[in-house]
Length: 201
Image 1 (cartoon, rainbow, N blue to C red):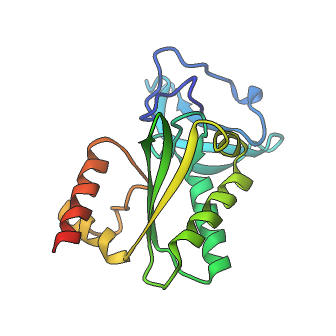
Image 2: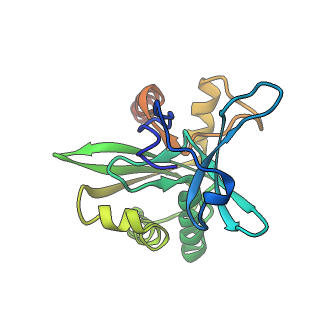
């Protein structure tokens, strides 16, 4: 699962490289394609997985093909995001029940814009620095790109209610509906518009 096989929106390219199970490596993220004798042929289920034991073919689910961020090759997965948020929450002794991130232009380069939902008091700048550092520790590609094309990360601290109200406005309430961890396209536009309206009120 990388930008040679998927586009920026998480869609599989025309002729992706497909591997058999004996060709995978430990520690890499893969998207699963399933073929069955019932007629499914190379069906993309949408989950990304990482093999942790090749002998037993043990995997962990690391995210969804649509929920990742790779503007410049940083390959930021939901797994990276969740782990970084958890580590920072523990360090700062705060609860972050909701968050999302978007890739945005930054001059002639790019940036990540994080929206953090917490009702605990926190210094946004300290949160930004810690979050950036944790992701660097978790993701080598991210660390490399932070020195090159991914020039900045921005953090807005919001209340959890902002996230809930946005989902309510979208008609997506209940356990089946989760706030997207990565915002792109129209959803990002709607989110920014919603936050602007909330600020005006």
